[in-house]
Amino acid sequence: MPGGAWTGDDREHDDACHERWLQVQHRPTRQPGYRDEWYDAQCGGCRFWIALSGELGRDWGVCTQAGSAFDGRVRFEHDGCGLFTAREDGSFG
Image (spheres, rainbow, N blue to C red):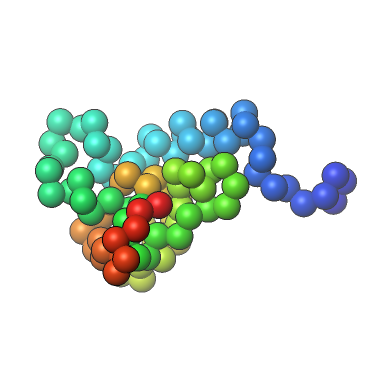
């Protein structure tokens, strides 16, 4: 491959991905019906969420919860689902 493997370190590309992916959030915190109990059950704190590498990994990761409708999909760290499982160490992101 000319120039080596794609690293994802392209600010314009990353910003475009971020904006495009935000449009498919399941539980955007800005939605009128966002419940208070969802605040502590966001993807970034789930044991089944794995952050992407590079700049996109600051906000985005992949769901690996086999029972979730989002298994294998890129998820925003502040999104969530009904199968949230807190990390034992309480970390986020």
